[in-house]
Amino acid sequence: MNYFQPQTVGQAVNIAQTFEATFLAGGTDLVLHMQTGKIHPNAIIDLGKISELKEIKETDGYLEIGSMATFAELGQSELVFQKALALWLACQTMGSPQIRNQATLGGNLGNCSPAADGLPPLLALGAEVRLISREGDEVVSLETLLSRTPLLSQGTLIREFRIPLKGLQSGFAKLGRRKALAIARLSVAIAIELEDNRVGKVRVALGAVGKRAYLSEILARELSDQELNEVWIEKGIEGVQRVVREALGARASAPYKREAVSGVFREALGTFIPEGGTKV
Amino acid sequence: MIEIKFVLNNKPCALNVEANERLLDVLRNRLGLMGTKEGCGEGECGACTVIIDGKTVNSCLVLAPQVDGCQITTIEGVGNRQSPHPVQKAFVQVGAVQCGFCTPGMVLSAKNLLDKNPQPNDKEIGVAMSGNLCRCTGYDKILRAVKLAAEEGKG
Image (cartoon, rainbow over the protein chains, first blue to last red):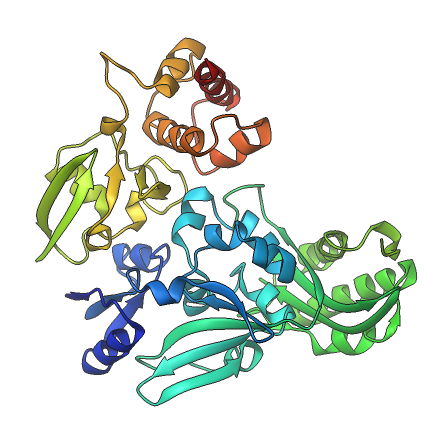
């Protein structure tokens, strides 16, 4: 097996054109899959030495996050805390300290587990993804990207995430079987336009409910442009339970998740809105 | 084979590795450093914890070529029988070791925490140790040992 350790994005994309290679980000899923024989890559392109992929910065109304930024780096970033609270919160509880030191946001998308912790916050915050391949650059909304099968064509590199800074307030909560080292059984990310006590646009993303994390159009429609109060919160809870019930159908976990989601939804709201819905 | 160079427990090290070799296997099987343990082999238990460039990682999830140019600390580089590290002393004093299999990883997580944050509060200790599982008994003595090491460090 060939192993490449390019220093630049350009080199990485060039190598990917020549060899049928697999990109290695943090390795917390890939190395395990290699070890168990689930995958047998012909060649590996280790992205770990490309410093431009690790940047977290604010530019022209966007929070830009390089695909190789780790969950630990994101979870310690004041910028992410200020501008993308839902993502920051997800980074606190993902895996363990060791996993957070290795795992990257780009790898989270590339592996695309149904329970991927990073994806619901990115969806709720309206993130775009910059991809790079032999065809050139492409900026696509994460929502659109997640509807593609396969997610990425061969040789396509996830370069960065772009979160538009539209002043959305956001929160996140997940349900695991224990507090640390838990794979999400259910996760909810919410982003809201909030002015005084008036809710503008609402985006609710769910994780571990379908094959991939997704944004609920129904909840966006039902919850946008209203007064923020306890009635609105109850309406949200009723709505999210209905959405989960419909998404899971007769699956074994359905009775549990459709009940549990009400608590997770309330908890996600509680990360940025005080109880009862009155804004500070 | 790929030639890699890194600094292991403050000593330069160069060797040829296969692309799909895990760091854990290189440490144990080629370098004879048996203090790094393989527990679950899937990044859950933290028994294989090592410190790479100041960060704790699970060495079962690291490919050996990834550490080219890195600084690595394993339990063998932390202390020894003659001069144990303050965290190791505290583990002995409190009795925080039962079977001992998780202990190298625990000590490395605790050492790395105290290197960065010499006076952690209980919550910070809890978070720093949350990636290391002990299946013998509870975590009370382990957390107490980390706290003691922090207190001893004050003087």
